[in-house]
Image (cartoon, rainbow, N blue to C red; front, side):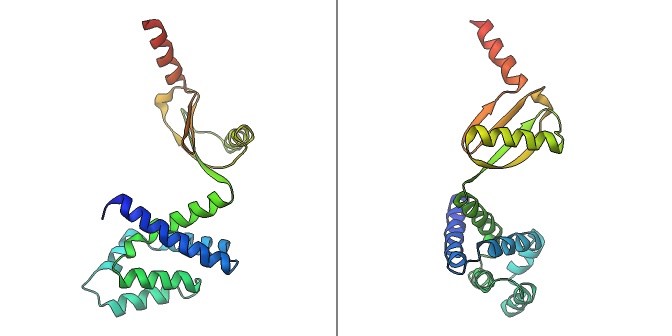
Length: 178
């Protein structure tokens, strides 16, 4: 199964679950459940749940026991994925659900790469400035790339702003080469 195909399948499952969550006024409860289960269903556990050497009834029993307190729709989804031998899709569905909820709330993902580790207050300040300039709520992840020398590379949605010293030096080099 190609990545694009599994991604679109995951999105369709996530959209269906979001409709159910919305009708039950339980979007946040579903989001928390997806997050718990995504962390609990590690690669090793997913491999065990896909193991044809273990009877389906035993695998179904394990899922039911492990998800006893979770929303019924999510438990049903896991059962369905198990029956259809598609349990490996679950982490993608959980991420797609989270993306849908964030998009609906107007939150965009941002990736900020800096030459050095930023303190918590520097991170908050940078995200605050980006939110004010973009007019959007940003859920940022941070990375360090020492080759940037200084400054930052900021990816918000599909927009990239590269104010790193490395990019500025490369631009200067292009200018001087003319």
